[in-house]
Amino acid sequence: MATDEKVSFSAEERAAMKEYAAELKAEKKRKGTADKAAQDEADLVAKIAELTGDDRVLAEKVHALVREHAPELAPKTWYGMPAYNRDGRAIVFFQPASKFKARYSTLGFNDGAQLDDGAMWPTSYALTTIGPAEERKLIELIRRAAG
Image (tube, rainbow, N blue to C red; front, top):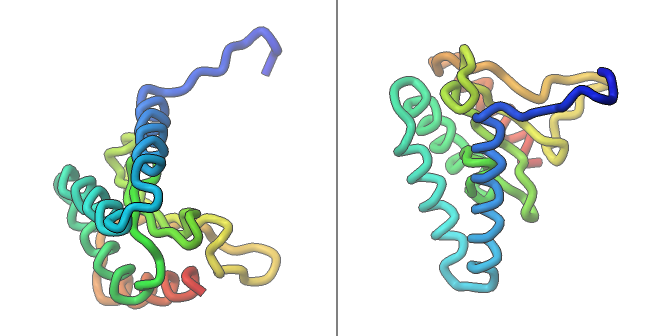
């Protein structure tokens, strides 16, 4: 890219950055309060409730799987998406297809996830539906990511 070309973010990217800034502001207000964890989870559940169609069905299923199989990960929104944290860092996140007008939703893992497998491994997975086989694979990934 030439140095005189401007880099611009899409409207969706700008909206996600604004959501993240609001999350950081709310985090600062909640720090040290007794109900912080409960409020973080309530925010995440409310964000899932805003979704529609397949995005909502998938997000609800992912949320249930993480809460059941990796309860040590703390639910919290991250850039306006459902995410699950360890030590304040997002480990697992669900990106609804509608967030960036994508063809499919994504289950993603950040570098704190314990998914290392040799010199190369996937860090995100496209989701269109969750049947029994997908559920088994998701449970395995979530458990490994949580360490």
